Length: 441
Image (cartoon, rainbow, N blue to C red; front, side, top):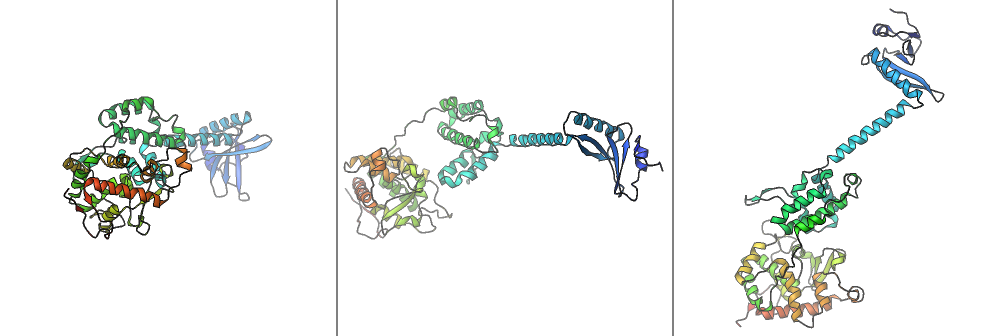
């Protein structure tokens, strides 16, 4: 065995022969060729290259690595590199920590830049759902959905926003959004306009999140060119006129599904939004105070704490009382434990039979339009029942209408509608107990 010494010219053979003295826990053997390099031998037999120098008057020792993985030449090169750093007054350990931090930051940035719109979109929906209504949440899911098949097995198109889902968040640019709008504006501008609004709100949210904000230099959906390509929504004017009421009610009452029939009639007679009425539960009906609690969009639209209370008028009460109580929902499906889906096809059937052009929002529009025939019905009453935001300071801050006052006007309006439709309804009868009798006139 080679004689052990404090400083020798280290070679692979000499390093292999080194042993720690029995009376020591470890032993250092220095290299004569590279003075700052040593081999540390422990009592257990482990051997490692170490670097030692002085920095700011203190001893600085750094383990380079195990002698089994480091060749003597590589260890000398590394020791020389570390010595050059110390000679400049820097601590190699701190430099290593900085480099590690930079590598981790670069890795985190790379991972963040790999986040797709779909991943952030799902996080957005999960975070914002408590503040949304079901209809608004459904819009986010519907407009971003992938192509697939319907329950009937028919193929369904992808939603307008599906185009962005596979894209990296960092790659979505105003130019990309503009090109998308150019294509979508040709086939489905209405859905695309809503999609652009949702996309703009989504990117605004991302810009406020720590994990996404560095990926968004500017909101790509705040795009004047894209809005121009999608055009401006034209004001809808479909509404039922007074002389069309008999044909409308005759067609609705001719539907074979009583739940759908009641829903469409109640749409006209309450002026509610389609989703608001579908969300109606039996617990929202107060027969003592003759009221309905409607889940409103938000407080700014006329509601308070997400709801507004409107009168339960006699004929609407009659319609609702005649429905089966299958679930908690008033307009319940006979096959699923949920409300019926918006019956667009049945309304189209009604419109065709009655010779009308009417949509569900047109029914809501009809409530406001027909109310103009009753000169005694204040505009503010109609707005409050329908859940519109007060249009003037006086309405907002100085007019308080109790439910009884709303009921006075709502019942008069309902009676007028039924009269124009040629429907006789005995308000003294038990709600839902008897069928409505139509007059022959």
